[in-house]
Image (cartoon, one colour):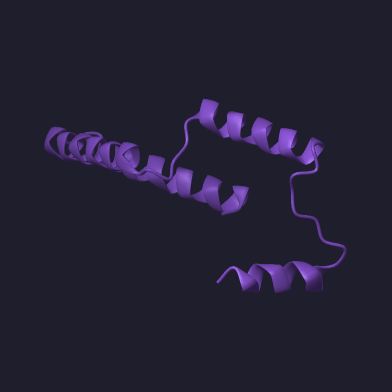
Length: 86
């Protein structure tokens, strides 16, 4: 998703929240739904914390420095290797 798309989505979200902010029952429903979304997000094993993400980058850089990485001289070689993974 591009930054422009994300910004448009953010604007739409805040406009929607503003439209229902005067209704206590709707705000309660929105809060319950937001909590539900957060629980689902935390339950996703593919998501990394900020610390885990940066640790994985550090590890990848270390592997690169020691030559423990896959390199390609051209796009065709890379695509051939990627297809072999399927």
